[in-house]
Image 1 (cartoon, rainbow, N blue to C red):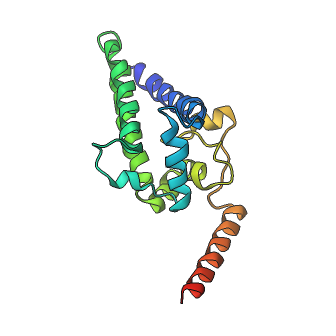
Image 2: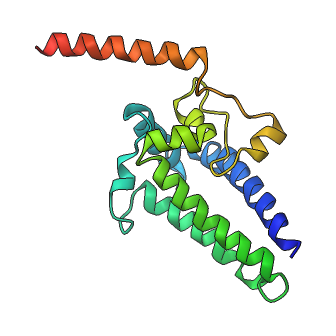
Image 3: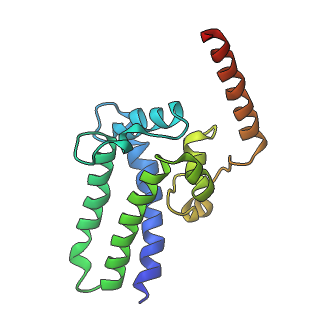
Length: 176
């Protein structure tokens, strides 16, 4: 049974590490398989108020959502040989993979839900520093590593919202 909390903490650490070093590290290189994350997913989230249109598409395609699913479920599959010796750990890690995918997808389909239930992930995309707040499902590892930078509910967020509203009003007047 000790495998359950160990897997929960390990999965959060793995999520943090992959996001920071693979998706943002290797993903900066446009020729990398992981480039979809930085060059597409982040651009889409910023441009569309945290929505990423690739999460509206079918999972069966060659886009960010499908590449993410391949990575997440590939990692879950890779630990399958541990099941005979660590069944609670393995089953909990599988749960964590499914939970990660489900929450991340919902966050980029429903920004209001993300802002309320995953503010640390909303902060990652919409805050001033997209190289902070690496965790998606829980902020544990960001808190431990000192990479949690709150944005939701701050004065900075209120200022940014006011600026966006002014710009939207100007665009509306210009098109009328």
